Length: 209
Image 1 (cartoon, rainbow, N blue to C red):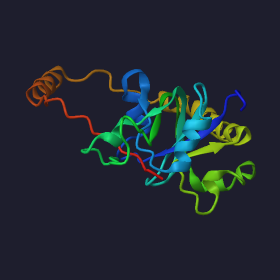
Image 2: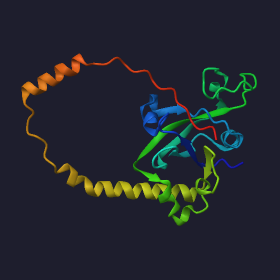
Image 3: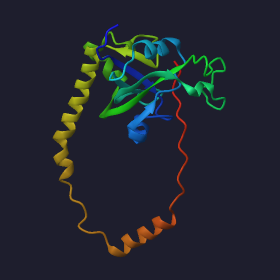
């Protein structure tokens, strides 16, 4: 088996766990739990290695799109959510002594300036054979060819270049010289009164395909 770095795509539902949730995670790192498809699990177990780069894909979104990249920081290990009867990913057949399901850890690398929608990917000749674009493909963990990964990064870089070119126009807009002090003080008092309690962190959920 080759030790060279590989590339992957993983799907997540942004309502449950988006790339921005990953950005807000400790050290911008999380375990990628909830995979409940044997082929997807086998990719993680047999082929995914520390240092591999990952495309993050928002599924069940409008539009569905590649939204950034991450890197694998820990190789496959048992997915403990399968043992938790309160988890939506609970599987009574999986136990600590016989862990059927696995997960990896990933760390955020980059959030794209704009999501790259599925329809955009379909128009790129270099991506014609990409697993994501294959009819009927539903795997939440899937391999990506080096050339495909490079083509998507090139699309993201082009977006960044475009954003850089338009940045001076946005920056040239003048802000108000000075806010009225009484209003600013009132706003601070109002914000202090309405200070909310910390909200509970949502439990994440990912597609098991």
